[in-house]
Image (cartoon, rainbow, N blue to C red; front, top):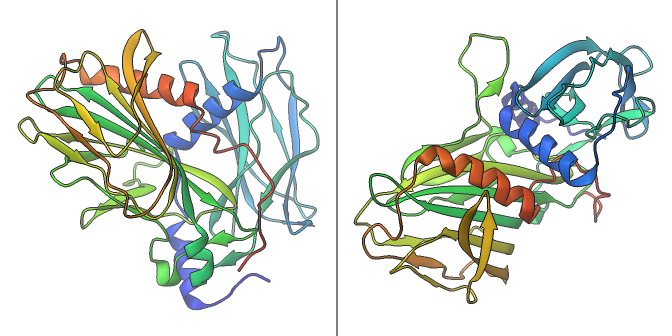
Length: 344
């Protein structure tokens, strides 16, 4: 049964927000890792919205497409009495990369269907919704399965830093916060400035667009419920010149932490992780430091003298981040995997 307490309803209201560019990029990367190109796109996408095997009527459904140079909403509809929906799928973009996927809003939570590459069947498609819980046991079960931290020396000294954090919900219920409180948070390094989420919502509305992440009291907090499986969050910030140290706070157990430092970076040292190894992405050279099964009290820090490396246009960081994440496999937001446990 779906929990019906007032705090649950309040939490669901916080989830009624437009789709973010972050999800679109995650869908693109997941599809790129899973599928190869095909010559012809689906003419029609026929699907259903279901919850516990039961059709969900009247659910708002959206179709989104991600291409090499464009991404966004392309159609809207509502599921019928049998939970069914149908979308005509436009011809594939000629840029060489295309993926489409549907989302559905059920009880205030947005659920994602699997990514479809051109040539994949357009029938038998499902968007699966879940019951919700805000129990302490459910919230405590959330964990960071992967955290990628990319450091690029900035033009003004200091560092441009981007993070991709994958939070895993192992249950068969969507975890929502009691009274609308966030269910997950991560401390931002002391001394960080210019926090950004790069999360412009994909919406035709001119209203102010809510974000999936907010910075509150030195913590990056997720403002959305966490559905079963993995959810990826992206944010960036700066460490000013002269800071000299990036202390990387952990939040709970971290299965894998990968730290990438753009080279050359004389005078840079990493503490708390094994020795680094060379890594290349987008034609740029990095040192990659990887730690596994890190405890909440693990100490990880980056120390440097001066700028720590050759300065680079901050716009390069976005392209490098995408390439790093694609190669490292950190984003699988739309890859459905059976949850590993039952709900609390």
